[in-house]
Length: 221
Image (cartoon, rainbow, N blue to C red; front, top):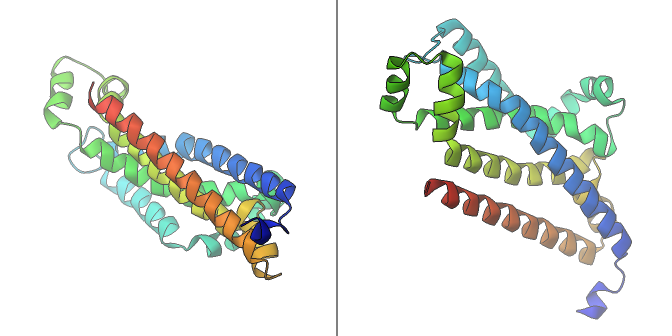
């Protein structure tokens, strides 16, 4: 094993891991900030819900479906002009975050909509009968009742973002994916490729285990 790993520059691995964690943390944060309200709006404006607006729901649903249907690697290239406007560059960690958020926010919004649909209709009707406003129903009924489902949605999105951050390396996105492509693939450095894959696998396992534990904890309450 020591012979297999002797040519690896661990400082590069550490820096790439740090970049991947930075991309993952920031993109997950912005995805939740954008995707949660969008998912709530999708739920509220859908048929039979509190703010039913068929035209608005159809428009939002269409946009979400379009963004979800574009492969991430193509989306990254398509939004390069927008990425440059937002962060001033299309490469490295800063250049990766806008396309990561654009790709994952619609995906997360759809998961939020699904989680809210799992809330017992009787609980919502009880809140309505007590005179609660739509805002109060969202903040005091829907979000607390759907909390386990929302945590599961964040976990699924974060795990998906791990693979997206790796793919961003194809267009110079930085992080472990970039290291695996530049050194592992283009320079035939198999040990670097293996180490980066193992780190990504460990990262996914940690995220999934943490998310599952939080879901079990809130399901008991």
